[in-house]
Amino acid sequence: MEWNKEKYDWPHFKLSSFVYSHPHTWHIQDTSLVTKNKNLPIILFIHGAGASTHSWRLMVDHLKNNFRVFLIDLPGHGFTKLGKKNRSSLECITQDLEVLLISQNINPSLIIGHSAGSAVALNLAISKKLKIKGILCLNGALGNFSGIAGLLYPFLAKVLAMSPLTVPFFTSLYSSKSQVEKFLNLTGSNISSEGVRYYRKLISDKKHVEGTLAMMSQWNLNQLILRWKQIEIPVCLIVGENDNIVQNSDNFKASKDIPKSEFITNPEQGHLMHEENPELISDQIKSFYNKIKSI
Image (cartoon, rainbow, N blue to C red; front, side, top):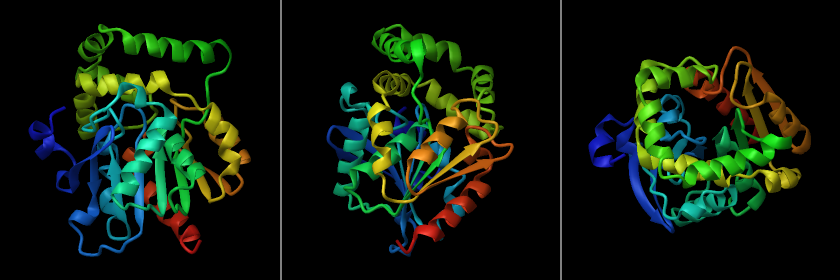
């Protein structure tokens, strides 16, 4: 997507700026650009595969008076330009995001990750280069496929990512309003027509689809799962009862391995619960932060 064409239609565009941090040009949104209080605790939001800053659009107004809200588009997603295609693995994204945050003097007190973004958040906690007080995961994609599926998934994702036919086929076949609605219905969440419109923009964009496929083809959680017992800060894992995308049991298992963790199930919520019920999720974020702020 081209920012100059889309910016006036993009949620909270006045919060947006672009920062080059090798090897990517990042799209970030920062509420400190429009608020008077510059000393609020920072919350970093990390979206999942295939999403962008738009997915947090309904959360900002609920949180901006209490926190400095800092949103990013992951490499190859939304308006962040993927500098190198081989920098889309969990380890590379974590490293590149750390470099960005340190260069911008952003030290988040709390990191919120959704789906695959939860894995990035937990990996940042393991790294310990940032002074993070807590991690909150929303429907975290925290389990590898097992058996034959575990072998086939990364292979097929790589094949799709390498084929020049994949992206135009996907964008032409799945970017219609009805197809996007069908896809979003699979998440178990009820998404507004506005939300459908933003996802349709993303799915219609070839660079965004390429970035999503690159991330999927390089994704591997093995090292994270082996190391998350090392996490020393509080972690809150929240799942939606109706999530059809990731297994709630993976989050429950993670909560048993991560020392200072808690596990919460939100009834009647799907994979995109931060979009269908932003008030509830915002309240849960505030509650968790109040528990950890003195750490």
